[in-house]
Length: 90
Image 1 (cartoon, one colour):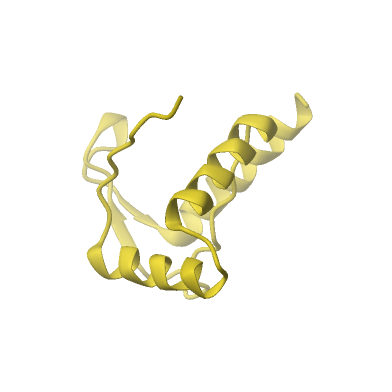
Image 2: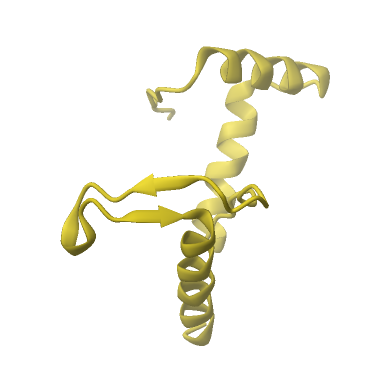
């Protein structure tokens, strides 16, 4: 039995992903299903690295830091700390 998932994504990204999958002899559905299975089996996922510049700034719209300016370096430090904590429980 199969189910349909509706995902919003950039149309250019979708087209590039479909072409890449086709170049490898796969469908985009096969690629996505493979990633979903991996996510379920490993109970984890990876993200690509942030740009190395660390100069881009973000505004926190929520919570106790609402309106604060957050750099990519700040995000990386928090993410690294969080991952260290998560790995300690494995």
